[in-house]
Amino acid sequence: MAQKSRIAPAPKVRRVEVMPLDEGEAVAVIELESAPPAHWLEALQREMRFTEGLESSAAKVDGCHVYLLGLEPGLGRATRHVGRLLATVPAVAR
Image 1: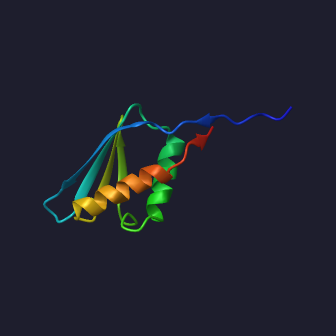
Image 2: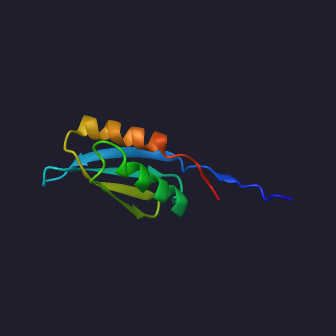
């Protein structure tokens, strides 16, 4: 019998904050309900490489927080980019 793959739901987002940095860039802090699985992080980083405005950004994880570093300084634009990014990162198969 074929093994069925289970879908791990994407972690739920509690809040997103975008803040300017002194260097002329912005950082987004994404608070999740739980620590994200490794496959979700890989999908996030893959989507970042193909998302306009996020190609040169980096994602760092600390527990339930994901930090997107090196965003373009326009806060409204950065917030839209992050929202679209989170909407496109799918649930991943285990």
